[in-house]
Length: 378
Ligand code: MG
Image (cartoon, rainbow, N blue to C red; front, side, top):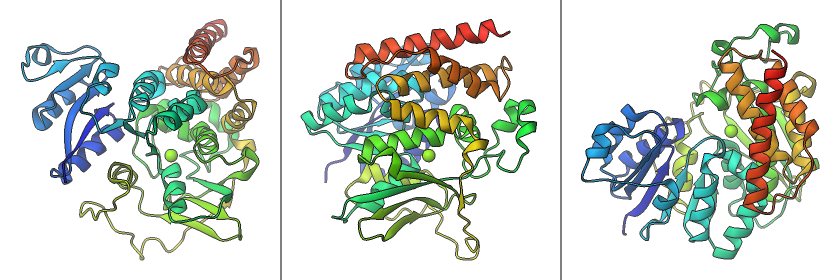
């Protein structure tokens, strides 16, 4: 079979690197034709050396990248619009993956999406585009991937989705101590090794709120039928309840390479010798506990923004990105993150999220508003 021609957006981030790891494991299956990265030019140079892509995007390309005659520098939109692309892995973070995702879906290209902000900002819009073009939109994030894997082969509708959450590094900390949490502490996730923003978002459970919105959009399940349970071991990646009350769970060691390869190979399933098998001696205590929402104001903010719909989810993710960035730069405290996001959401006026213009306008507004409010409070 012909190799699948792949573009990886966000190749130097955590999901991007693990995607390249899968490609390395299966060199006969994939041809990497494009790489896009942000600021990690050094790693990008070594990825170019190793995978020899024909097209490259980089915010500030180095001299050696510019001088490389074997590659063509182009924008991410141009990269996904090339005539020979089969799959685009969107492993960027924040709003940067939005337009390339739309472009790829318009061109009927399969999009594997790890950049959940894109789904949260433009879920209905990208679903409409992919319905029209027939493009596949495949989840990569471990929870929606788990739901998707559980659904395969099922004809019954989903009655309920149960997302699992590790609880993050502060699950056992007294809420009164959260004011003094440092970026270093927030960046220590107990079970997953991920990028900075998503790690902080996991510690506030904003990330789980994003996943509730993502599950609502991707699987057409009402917010009232999506629940979250704390599962500190990160082995059960999510569950679905079917019409007859039966519950299916997807279980595997916490390793993103499994959901990545599930999307890249879909509908094929392959054995990957690099993936650690489920260890029956380690997994003897798989706890599931109800979520105490009062501990996680970011989670509650996210779900209510999702229920309000329109441009509220865009404002949520934009304000959160600014807030997390300010926190990581020691400009605001950990507990200021939900305060700032809440204030921005409070000031937002509803608009429909049915056009790219509306979504981008809400995104810009929320970022400026968050920065202005943070400036006001200092
Ligand atoms: Mg996740």
